[in-house]
Image 1 (cartoon, rainbow, N blue to C red):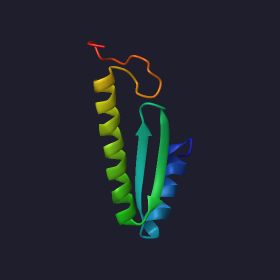
Image 2: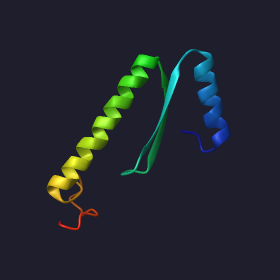
Image 3: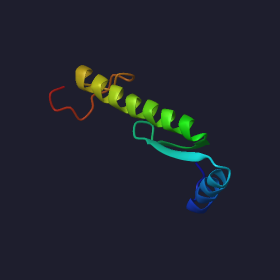
Image 4: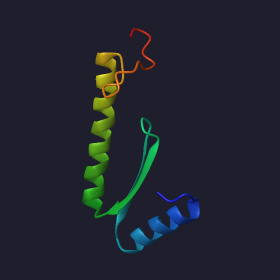
Length: 79
């Protein structure tokens, strides 16, 4: 993603003008952002993949009581 809203909107407008869909994603764990453009079906699939990623990460944290990558304790009061 760009650092300002105007550049991000320009990216989105350009993608739509070319018949593409866009997807913005904020990864709460890394605090990173992605802004993607692509064929509508590809963007739909990417959205599903990201939804699955979020769900699996939450399940792993719940099961392990900690961040599954770093091993640090999360907000789980039972951990």
